[in-house]
Length: 225
Length: 258
Ligand SMILES: Nc1ncnc2c1ncn2[C@@H]1O[C@H](COP(=O)(O)OP(=O)(O)OP(=O)(O)O)[C@@H](O)[C@H]1O
Ligand SMILES: [Mg+2]
Image 1 (tube, rainbow over the protein chains, first blue to last red):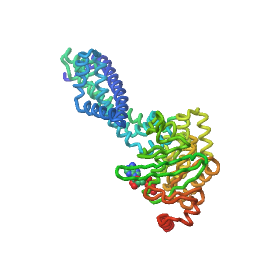
Image 2: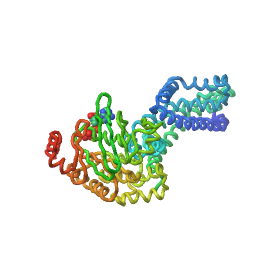
Image 3: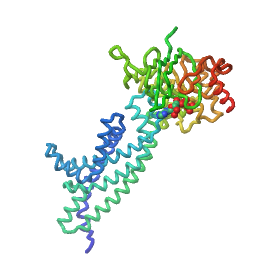
Image 4: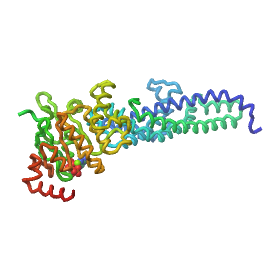
Protein backbone atom coordinates (compact mmCIF):
# COMPACT_ATOMS: atom_id res chain seq x y z
CA UNK A 1 0.00 0.00 0.00
CA UNK A 2 1.21 3.48 -0.86
CA UNK A 3 -0.15 5.15 2.27
CA UNK A 4 -0.46 3.34 5.60
CA UNK A 5 -2.72 4.98 8.19
CA UNK A 6 -1.58 2.65 10.95
CA UNK A 7 1.97 3.74 10.40
CA UNK A 8 0.83 7.37 10.45
CA UNK A 9 -0.73 6.94 13.92
CA UNK A 10 2.36 5.14 15.08
CA UNK A 11 4.76 7.95 14.17
CA UNK A 12 2.49 10.88 15.03
CA UNK A 13 3.53 11.15 18.72
CA UNK A 14 7.22 11.24 17.83
CA UNK A 15 6.62 13.85 15.14
CA UNK A 16 4.54 15.99 17.48
CA UNK A 17 7.34 15.94 20.04
CA UNK A 18 9.78 16.90 17.31
CA UNK A 19 7.50 19.69 16.13
CA UNK A 20 7.84 21.25 19.57
CA UNK A 21 11.58 21.35 19.02
CA UNK A 22 11.04 22.99 15.63
CA UNK A 23 8.71 25.59 17.13
CA UNK A 24 11.10 26.21 19.98
CA UNK A 25 14.04 26.70 17.60
CA UNK A 26 11.91 29.07 15.50
CA UNK A 27 10.71 31.20 18.40
CA UNK A 28 14.10 31.39 20.12
CA UNK A 29 15.88 32.02 16.84
CA UNK A 30 13.45 34.74 15.89
CA UNK A 31 13.52 36.37 19.32
CA UNK A 32 17.28 36.59 18.93
CA UNK A 33 16.98 37.83 15.33
CA UNK A 34 14.42 40.50 16.22
CA UNK A 35 16.46 41.82 19.15
CA UNK A 36 19.85 41.60 17.49
CA UNK A 37 18.43 43.13 14.31
CA UNK A 38 17.28 46.23 16.17
CA UNK A 39 20.62 46.59 17.94
CA UNK A 40 22.51 46.18 14.65
CA UNK A 41 20.23 48.70 12.91
CA UNK A 42 20.81 51.31 15.61
CA UNK A 43 24.55 50.66 15.62
CA UNK A 44 24.67 50.95 11.86
CA UNK A 45 22.95 54.34 12.05
CA UNK A 46 25.43 55.63 14.61
CA UNK A 47 27.23 58.84 13.73
CA UNK A 48 30.43 57.36 15.17
CA UNK A 49 32.07 55.68 12.21
CA UNK A 50 34.06 53.15 14.26
CA UNK A 51 30.67 51.76 15.30
CA UNK A 52 28.69 52.08 12.06
CA UNK A 53 31.32 50.86 9.58
CA UNK A 54 32.21 47.54 11.28
CA UNK A 55 28.50 46.92 11.93
CA UNK A 56 27.69 47.41 8.25
CA UNK A 57 30.56 45.06 7.34
CA UNK A 58 29.34 42.43 9.79
CA UNK A 59 25.76 42.59 8.48
CA UNK A 60 26.90 42.30 4.86
CA UNK A 61 29.19 39.40 5.71
CA UNK A 62 26.48 37.44 7.51
CA UNK A 63 23.94 38.11 4.79
CA UNK A 64 26.19 36.99 1.98
CA UNK A 65 27.24 33.65 3.45
CA UNK A 66 24.91 30.62 3.59
CA UNK A 67 23.20 29.95 6.88
CA UNK A 68 24.23 26.28 6.71
CA UNK A 69 27.88 27.29 6.77
CA UNK A 70 27.18 29.53 9.75
CA UNK A 71 25.49 26.64 11.55
CA UNK A 72 28.47 24.38 10.87
CA UNK A 73 30.89 27.11 11.86
CA UNK A 74 29.29 27.69 15.24
CA UNK A 75 28.83 23.97 15.95
CA UNK A 76 32.10 22.55 14.62
CA UNK A 77 34.59 25.44 14.59
CA UNK A 78 33.75 27.30 17.80
CA UNK A 79 34.84 24.30 19.92
CA UNK A 80 38.34 24.79 18.52
CA UNK A 81 38.33 28.11 20.37
CA UNK A 82 37.00 26.47 23.49
CA UNK A 83 33.35 27.39 22.90
CA UNK A 84 31.41 24.14 22.97
CA UNK A 85 27.68 24.54 22.46
CA UNK A 86 24.86 22.00 22.38
CA UNK A 87 23.52 21.48 18.87
CA UNK A 88 20.22 23.21 19.60
CA UNK A 89 21.94 26.28 21.07
CA UNK A 90 24.40 26.50 18.20
CA UNK A 91 21.54 26.20 15.71
CA UNK A 92 19.43 28.84 17.38
CA UNK A 93 22.36 31.25 17.53
CA UNK A 94 23.19 30.69 13.86
CA UNK A 95 19.60 31.22 12.74
CA UNK A 96 19.22 34.25 15.02
CA UNK A 97 22.42 35.77 13.72
CA UNK A 98 21.58 35.16 10.09
CA UNK A 99 18.03 36.43 10.26
CA UNK A 100 19.07 39.19 12.66
CA UNK A 101 21.21 40.68 9.93
CA UNK A 102 18.25 40.57 7.55
CA UNK A 103 15.96 42.06 10.18
CA UNK A 104 18.45 44.86 10.81
CA UNK A 105 17.95 46.08 7.24
CA UNK A 106 14.20 46.03 7.74
CA UNK A 107 14.49 47.99 10.98
CA UNK A 108 16.85 50.43 9.34
CA UNK A 109 14.31 51.21 6.63
CA UNK A 110 11.70 51.73 9.33
CA UNK A 111 13.95 53.98 11.39
CA UNK A 112 14.96 56.05 8.39
CA UNK A 113 11.33 56.62 7.50
CA UNK A 114 10.61 58.46 10.73
CA UNK A 115 10.58 62.15 9.71
CA UNK A 116 13.54 64.28 10.76
CA UNK A 117 11.13 66.65 12.50
CA UNK A 118 10.47 63.96 15.11
CA UNK A 119 14.15 63.81 16.03
CA UNK A 120 14.30 67.58 16.12
CA UNK A 121 11.25 67.86 18.36
CA UNK A 122 12.82 65.30 20.69
CA UNK A 123 16.05 67.31 20.81
CA UNK A 124 14.16 70.55 21.39
CA UNK A 125 12.45 68.88 24.35
CA UNK A 126 15.86 67.74 25.56
CA UNK A 127 14.91 64.05 25.60
CA UNK A 128 17.88 61.71 26.04
CA UNK A 129 18.90 59.55 23.08
CA UNK A 130 17.59 56.48 24.91
CA UNK A 131 14.13 57.93 25.58
CA UNK A 132 14.03 59.37 22.07
CA UNK A 133 14.55 55.92 20.60
CA UNK A 134 12.32 54.11 23.07
CA UNK A 135 9.32 56.44 23.17
CA UNK A 136 9.46 58.50 19.97
CA UNK A 137 11.35 56.76 17.17
CA UNK A 138 10.85 53.02 17.68
CA UNK A 139 7.07 53.19 18.20
CA UNK A 140 6.81 54.95 14.86
CA UNK A 141 9.44 52.88 13.05
CA UNK A 142 8.28 49.37 13.91
CA UNK A 143 4.57 49.01 13.08
CA UNK A 144 5.13 49.70 9.36
CA UNK A 145 7.82 47.00 9.16
CA UNK A 146 6.01 44.25 11.07
CA UNK A 147 4.84 42.55 7.85
CA UNK A 148 8.41 42.45 6.55
CA UNK A 149 9.69 41.09 9.86
CA UNK A 150 6.90 38.51 9.74
CA UNK A 151 8.12 37.29 6.37
CA UNK A 152 11.49 36.60 7.96
CA UNK A 153 9.81 34.74 10.81
CA UNK A 154 8.22 32.42 8.27
CA UNK A 155 11.47 32.14 6.30
CA UNK A 156 13.41 31.27 9.46
CA UNK A 157 10.78 28.67 10.37
CA UNK A 158 11.16 27.03 6.97
CA UNK A 159 14.95 26.91 7.38
CA UNK A 160 14.84 25.01 10.68
CA UNK A 161 15.24 21.64 8.85
CA UNK A 162 18.82 22.78 8.27
CA UNK A 163 19.38 22.03 11.95
CA UNK A 164 19.06 18.34 11.07
CA UNK A 165 22.54 18.74 9.62
CA UNK A 166 23.92 19.03 13.14
CA UNK A 167 21.56 16.33 14.43
CA UNK A 168 19.10 18.51 16.32
CA UNK A 169 16.06 16.32 16.83
CA UNK A 170 13.65 18.66 15.09
CA UNK A 171 10.99 17.49 12.65
CA UNK A 172 13.14 16.77 9.63
CA UNK A 173 15.75 14.85 11.55
CA UNK A 174 13.04 12.85 13.33
CA UNK A 175 11.31 12.06 10.05
CA UNK A 176 14.59 10.87 8.57
CA UNK A 177 15.24 8.61 11.54
CA UNK A 178 11.71 7.19 11.45
CA UNK A 179 12.02 6.61 7.73
CA UNK A 180 15.33 4.82 8.01
CA UNK A 181 13.96 2.57 10.76
CA UNK A 182 10.92 1.38 8.81
CA UNK A 183 12.09 2.05 5.25
CA UNK A 184 8.91 4.08 4.77
CA UNK A 185 9.55 7.71 3.95
CA UNK A 186 6.25 8.73 2.35
CA UNK A 187 4.30 9.21 5.56
CA UNK A 188 6.90 10.98 7.73
CA UNK A 189 8.06 13.34 5.01
CA UNK A 190 4.51 14.13 3.91
CA UNK A 191 3.42 14.78 7.48
CA UNK A 192 6.37 17.10 8.02
CA UNK A 193 5.53 18.97 4.83
CA UNK A 194 1.91 19.29 5.93
CA UNK A 195 2.98 20.54 9.30
CA UNK A 196 5.14 23.28 7.76
CA UNK A 197 2.27 24.31 5.52
CA UNK A 198 -0.20 24.58 8.39
CA UNK A 199 2.25 26.36 10.67
CA UNK A 200 3.20 28.88 7.98
CA UNK A 201 -0.47 29.76 7.60
CA UNK A 202 -0.87 30.02 11.37
CA UNK A 203 2.21 32.25 11.56
CA UNK A 204 0.87 34.54 8.85
CA UNK A 205 -2.41 34.95 10.76
CA UNK A 206 -0.46 35.54 13.98
CA UNK A 207 1.62 38.27 12.34
CA UNK A 208 -1.52 40.07 11.25
CA UNK A 209 -2.72 39.97 14.87
CA UNK A 210 0.58 41.36 16.13
CA UNK A 211 0.40 44.13 13.58
CA UNK A 212 -3.06 45.15 14.71
CA UNK A 213 -2.08 44.92 18.36
CA UNK A 214 1.08 47.00 17.85
CA UNK A 215 -0.86 49.67 16.05
CA UNK A 216 -3.21 49.89 18.99
CA UNK A 217 -0.80 49.69 21.91
CA UNK A 218 2.07 51.77 20.53
CA UNK A 219 -0.39 54.56 19.97
CA UNK A 220 -0.47 54.81 23.70
CA UNK A 221 2.98 54.33 25.22
CA UNK A 222 2.17 55.81 28.60
CA UNK A 223 -0.71 53.44 29.01
CA UNK A 224 -2.80 56.52 29.68
CA UNK A 225 -6.52 56.05 29.03
CA UNK B 1 22.49 96.92 32.15
CA UNK B 2 21.23 93.40 32.87
CA UNK B 3 22.91 90.45 31.19
CA UNK B 4 21.25 89.69 27.87
CA UNK B 5 19.11 86.54 27.80
CA UNK B 6 20.51 85.64 24.40
CA UNK B 7 23.74 86.85 22.90
CA UNK B 8 25.23 85.97 19.53
CA UNK B 9 28.89 86.93 19.33
CA UNK B 10 30.41 86.89 15.85
CA UNK B 11 28.48 83.76 14.96
CA UNK B 12 29.20 82.28 11.57
CA UNK B 13 27.38 79.36 9.99
CA UNK B 14 28.41 77.73 6.76
CA UNK B 15 26.98 74.87 4.73
CA UNK B 16 29.93 73.75 2.68
CA UNK B 17 31.02 76.76 0.66
CA UNK B 18 27.81 78.67 1.39
CA UNK B 19 28.06 81.14 4.27
CA UNK B 20 24.56 81.36 5.66
CA UNK B 21 25.32 83.64 8.60
CA UNK B 22 28.28 85.91 8.51
CA UNK B 23 29.69 87.03 11.85
CA UNK B 24 26.31 87.72 13.42
CA UNK B 25 26.05 89.86 16.54
CA UNK B 26 22.75 90.09 18.36
CA UNK B 27 21.71 90.68 21.96
CA UNK B 28 18.25 90.04 23.31
CA UNK B 29 17.19 91.27 26.74
CA UNK B 30 15.22 89.14 29.21
CA UNK B 31 11.50 89.23 28.42
CA UNK B 32 12.13 90.95 25.10
CA UNK B 33 9.98 89.96 22.09
CA UNK B 34 11.95 90.01 18.88
CA UNK B 35 10.51 89.47 15.42
CA UNK B 36 12.83 88.28 12.69
CA UNK B 37 11.78 89.16 9.16
CA UNK B 38 13.53 88.88 5.82
CA UNK B 39 13.41 87.21 2.44
CA UNK B 40 13.56 83.45 1.91
CA UNK B 41 17.03 82.01 2.38
CA UNK B 42 18.30 84.94 4.43
CA UNK B 43 19.15 82.69 7.39
CA UNK B 44 16.19 83.30 9.72
CA UNK B 45 15.47 79.66 10.43
CA UNK B 46 19.16 78.98 10.83
CA UNK B 47 19.38 81.52 13.66
CA UNK B 48 16.66 79.70 15.60
CA UNK B 49 18.03 76.25 14.84
CA UNK B 50 21.47 77.22 16.12
CA UNK B 51 19.91 78.51 19.34
CA UNK B 52 17.99 75.25 19.72
CA UNK B 53 21.32 73.42 19.17
CA UNK B 54 19.87 71.65 16.13
CA UNK B 55 22.76 73.06 14.09
CA UNK B 56 26.40 73.40 15.05
CA UNK B 57 28.00 76.78 14.48
CA UNK B 58 31.29 77.23 12.66
CA UNK B 59 32.59 80.27 14.46
CA UNK B 60 31.74 82.59 17.32
CA UNK B 61 29.82 81.88 20.53
CA UNK B 62 26.19 81.94 21.56
CA UNK B 63 25.38 82.74 25.20
CA UNK B 64 22.06 82.09 26.85
CA UNK B 65 21.25 83.58 30.23
CA UNK B 66 24.89 84.51 30.77
CA UNK B 67 26.14 80.99 30.08
CA UNK B 68 27.82 79.81 26.89
CA UNK B 69 25.50 77.55 24.90
CA UNK B 70 27.66 76.38 22.05
CA UNK B 71 30.78 76.10 24.15
CA UNK B 72 31.72 74.84 27.58
CA UNK B 73 34.43 75.97 29.92
CA UNK B 74 37.30 73.53 30.21
CA UNK B 75 40.64 74.25 31.88
CA UNK B 76 39.84 77.95 31.85
CA UNK B 77 39.12 78.02 28.12
CA UNK B 78 35.96 77.68 26.10
CA UNK B 79 35.84 74.58 23.93
CA UNK B 80 32.98 73.37 21.69
CA UNK B 81 30.23 71.88 23.84
CA UNK B 82 29.74 68.12 23.99
CA UNK B 83 26.36 66.32 24.08
CA UNK B 84 26.27 66.18 27.86
CA UNK B 85 26.84 69.88 28.27
CA UNK B 86 24.27 70.66 25.59
CA UNK B 87 21.69 68.56 27.39
CA UNK B 88 22.22 70.66 30.50
CA UNK B 89 21.98 74.08 28.89
CA UNK B 90 19.42 73.66 26.15
CA UNK B 91 16.64 73.16 28.69
CA UNK B 92 16.44 76.95 28.86
CA UNK B 93 15.16 77.05 25.30
CA UNK B 94 11.95 75.81 23.75
CA UNK B 95 10.97 75.77 20.12
CA UNK B 96 7.78 75.62 18.08
CA UNK B 97 8.16 74.39 14.53
CA UNK B 98 6.50 75.36 11.30
CA UNK B 99 5.14 71.83 10.82
CA UNK B 100 4.29 71.23 14.51
CA UNK B 101 6.28 67.99 14.79
CA UNK B 102 3.91 66.57 17.36
CA UNK B 103 4.42 62.93 18.29
CA UNK B 104 1.68 61.27 16.23
CA UNK B 105 1.39 58.17 18.41
CA UNK B 106 0.65 60.13 21.57
CA UNK B 107 -2.43 62.02 22.70
CA UNK B 108 -2.23 65.79 23.09
CA UNK B 109 -1.88 65.33 26.83
CA UNK B 110 0.85 62.71 26.53
CA UNK B 111 2.74 64.91 24.05
CA UNK B 112 2.94 67.52 26.82
CA UNK B 113 3.88 64.99 29.54
CA UNK B 114 6.66 63.04 27.87
CA UNK B 115 9.55 65.45 28.41
CA UNK B 116 8.50 66.73 31.86
CA UNK B 117 8.47 63.12 33.08
CA UNK B 118 11.68 61.95 31.45
CA UNK B 119 13.75 65.13 31.49
CA UNK B 120 12.52 67.10 34.50
CA UNK B 121 11.72 63.99 36.52
CA UNK B 122 8.15 65.00 37.32
CA UNK B 123 5.79 62.30 38.57
CA UNK B 124 2.96 61.25 36.27
CA UNK B 125 0.44 63.18 38.34
CA UNK B 126 2.51 66.36 38.38
CA UNK B 127 3.21 66.11 34.67
CA UNK B 128 -0.41 65.41 33.87
CA UNK B 129 -1.58 68.34 35.95
CA UNK B 130 0.91 70.69 34.31
CA UNK B 131 0.02 69.43 30.84
CA UNK B 132 -3.70 69.83 31.52
CA UNK B 133 -3.20 73.38 32.76
CA UNK B 134 -1.22 74.31 29.67
CA UNK B 135 -3.70 72.71 27.30
CA UNK B 136 -6.35 74.69 29.10
CA UNK B 137 -4.29 77.85 28.63
CA UNK B 138 -4.13 77.27 24.87
CA UNK B 139 -7.87 76.57 24.83
CA UNK B 140 -7.76 72.83 24.27
CA UNK B 141 -8.94 71.34 27.55
CA UNK B 142 -11.62 69.41 25.67
CA UNK B 143 -9.07 67.91 23.23
CA UNK B 144 -6.63 66.44 25.79
CA UNK B 145 -7.19 62.85 24.74
CA UNK B 146 -7.21 63.39 21.00
CA UNK B 147 -4.33 62.29 18.82
CA UNK B 148 -2.63 64.82 16.52
CA UNK B 149 -4.30 63.30 13.45
CA UNK B 150 -7.67 64.11 15.01
CA UNK B 151 -6.83 67.81 15.45
CA UNK B 152 -6.86 70.73 13.02
CA UNK B 153 -3.58 72.41 12.13
CA UNK B 154 -4.30 75.31 14.45
CA UNK B 155 -5.10 72.95 17.31
CA UNK B 156 -1.96 70.91 16.65
CA UNK B 157 0.16 74.03 16.73
CA UNK B 158 -1.41 75.07 20.03
CA UNK B 159 -0.58 71.64 21.47
CA UNK B 160 2.98 72.13 20.24
CA UNK B 161 3.15 75.46 22.07
CA UNK B 162 1.83 73.84 25.26
CA UNK B 163 4.33 71.00 24.88
CA UNK B 164 7.25 73.43 24.65
CA UNK B 165 5.97 75.48 27.60
CA UNK B 166 5.68 72.39 29.79
CA UNK B 167 9.47 72.41 30.00
CA UNK B 168 9.39 75.94 31.49
CA UNK B 169 11.94 77.42 29.09
CA UNK B 170 13.23 80.95 29.49
CA UNK B 171 13.45 81.53 25.76
CA UNK B 172 10.82 80.48 23.23
CA UNK B 173 11.54 80.22 19.54
CA UNK B 174 8.80 80.33 16.92
CA UNK B 175 9.68 79.52 13.32
CA UNK B 176 6.89 80.65 11.00
CA UNK B 177 4.44 78.84 13.23
CA UNK B 178 1.40 79.93 11.26
CA UNK B 179 2.63 79.53 7.71
CA UNK B 180 1.54 75.88 7.37
CA UNK B 181 -1.99 76.79 8.51
CA UNK B 182 -5.14 77.58 6.61
CA UNK B 183 -5.75 81.33 6.85
CA UNK B 184 -8.79 81.00 9.11
CA UNK B 185 -6.70 79.10 11.69
CA UNK B 186 -3.88 81.65 11.95
CA UNK B 187 -5.73 83.88 14.40
CA UNK B 188 -6.20 81.25 17.12
CA UNK B 189 -2.47 80.52 17.20
CA UNK B 190 -1.48 84.20 17.21
CA UNK B 191 -3.91 84.79 20.08
CA UNK B 192 -2.15 82.13 22.13
CA UNK B 193 1.21 83.77 21.42
CA UNK B 194 -0.19 87.18 22.43
CA UNK B 195 -1.45 85.71 25.67
CA UNK B 196 1.92 84.10 26.34
CA UNK B 197 3.64 87.41 25.80
CA UNK B 198 1.40 89.10 28.34
CA UNK B 199 1.16 86.45 31.03
CA UNK B 200 4.62 84.89 31.10
CA UNK B 201 8.06 86.33 31.53
CA UNK B 202 9.35 84.78 28.36
CA UNK B 203 11.98 85.95 25.99
CA UNK B 204 10.53 85.31 22.56
CA UNK B 205 12.13 85.14 19.14
CA UNK B 206 9.86 84.68 16.23
CA UNK B 207 10.46 84.32 12.57
CA UNK B 208 7.33 85.53 10.86
CA UNK B 209 5.81 86.68 7.62
CA UNK B 210 2.85 88.18 9.49
CA UNK B 211 3.99 91.81 9.38
CA UNK B 212 0.85 93.03 11.14
CA UNK B 213 1.48 90.71 14.05
CA UNK B 214 5.18 91.61 14.22
CA UNK B 215 4.29 95.28 14.34
CA UNK B 216 1.79 94.91 17.14
CA UNK B 217 3.57 92.24 19.21
CA UNK B 218 7.33 92.73 18.95
CA UNK B 219 9.47 95.06 21.00
CA UNK B 220 12.05 94.93 18.25
CA UNK B 221 12.16 93.85 14.63
CA UNK B 222 15.32 92.53 12.96
CA UNK B 223 15.49 92.52 9.20
CA UNK B 224 17.75 89.76 7.86
CA UNK B 225 19.26 89.82 4.43
CA UNK B 226 22.04 87.60 3.11
CA UNK B 227 22.95 86.23 6.52
CA UNK B 228 23.24 89.58 8.22
CA UNK B 229 21.03 91.91 10.18
CA UNK B 230 20.67 94.80 7.81
CA UNK B 231 18.44 96.84 10.06
CA UNK B 232 16.85 96.47 13.47
CA UNK B 233 14.73 98.70 15.64
CA UNK B 234 11.33 99.35 17.14
CA UNK B 235 8.53 98.05 14.89
CA UNK B 236 7.15 101.52 14.18
CA UNK B 237 10.60 102.63 12.97
CA UNK B 238 11.15 99.60 10.75
CA UNK B 239 7.68 99.50 9.27
CA UNK B 240 7.02 103.24 8.89
CA UNK B 241 10.44 104.68 8.29
CA UNK B 242 12.97 102.04 7.26
CA UNK B 243 16.43 103.51 6.82
CA UNK B 244 17.88 100.88 4.51
CA UNK B 245 16.99 100.51 0.86
CA UNK B 246 16.82 96.70 1.14
CA UNK B 247 14.34 96.88 4.00
CA UNK B 248 12.16 99.24 1.98
CA UNK B 249 12.26 96.92 -1.02
CA UNK B 250 11.42 93.87 1.08
CA UNK B 251 8.53 95.56 2.89
CA UNK B 252 6.99 96.91 -0.28
CA UNK B 253 7.26 93.47 -1.92
CA UNK B 254 5.56 91.86 1.09
CA UNK B 255 2.85 94.53 1.16
CA UNK B 256 2.16 94.05 -2.52
CA UNK B 257 1.83 90.30 -2.08
CA UNK B 258 -0.72 90.55 0.73
N1 LIG C 1 20.98 71.58 5.83
C1 LIG C 1 21.33 72.49 4.92
N2 LIG C 1 22.27 72.21 4.00
C2 LIG C 1 22.64 73.11 3.07
N3 LIG C 1 22.15 74.36 2.98
C3 LIG C 1 21.20 74.72 3.87
C4 LIG C 1 20.74 73.81 4.89
N4 LIG C 1 19.81 74.44 5.63
C5 LIG C 1 19.69 75.68 5.10
N5 LIG C 1 20.52 75.86 4.05
C6 LIG C 1 20.68 77.10 3.28
O1 LIG C 1 20.93 78.14 4.19
C7 LIG C 1 20.31 79.33 3.75
C8 LIG C 1 19.47 79.90 4.86
O2 LIG C 1 18.44 79.02 5.15
P1 LIG C 1 17.30 79.36 6.20
O3 LIG C 1 16.44 78.16 6.27
O4 LIG C 1 17.89 79.86 7.46
O5 LIG C 1 16.51 80.54 5.47
P2 LIG C 1 15.19 81.28 5.92
O6 LIG C 1 15.54 82.70 6.07
O7 LIG C 1 14.57 80.61 7.08
O8 LIG C 1 14.27 81.11 4.65
P3 LIG C 1 12.70 80.83 4.52
O9 LIG C 1 12.01 82.16 4.66
O10 LIG C 1 12.54 80.28 3.15
O11 LIG C 1 12.33 79.85 5.59
C9 LIG C 1 19.52 78.99 2.50
O12 LIG C 1 20.28 79.37 1.39
C10 LIG C 1 19.41 77.49 2.55
O13 LIG C 1 19.37 76.95 1.26
MG1 LIG D 1 12.80 79.45 7.37
